[in-house]
Image 1 (cartoon, rainbow, N blue to C red):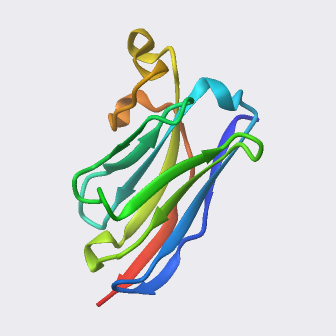
Image 2: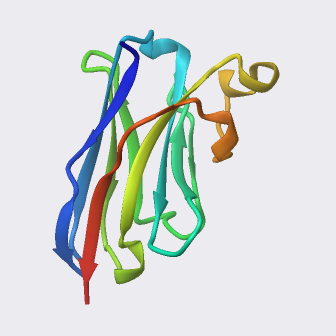
Length: 131
């Protein structure tokens, strides 16, 4: 069964840190880019960060310099280290996978946070940042 599973959410005070994990199974990890997205109540889902198979990274401007994405091939897991958290980071966080052949092999060397490109989604993990 092909799936991605998020973990690591919880509650933290502003200025604190948290690490989210996205563990994959049933897919060839090397063939997929992984993205992190989030959705706050009443808002649309937005992209946070993504990473290609060869570790090229992209960050949304709102998290650049505070969040770090990484991937561990042995564990088939992608991590999102979140530092200097702010109350506006409060949301449900989702990880999703995109095959590198998507959109004419775009994801072979780059990634972007286009929700419609990602085909395998997790159930999400909630992050709450209190003032």
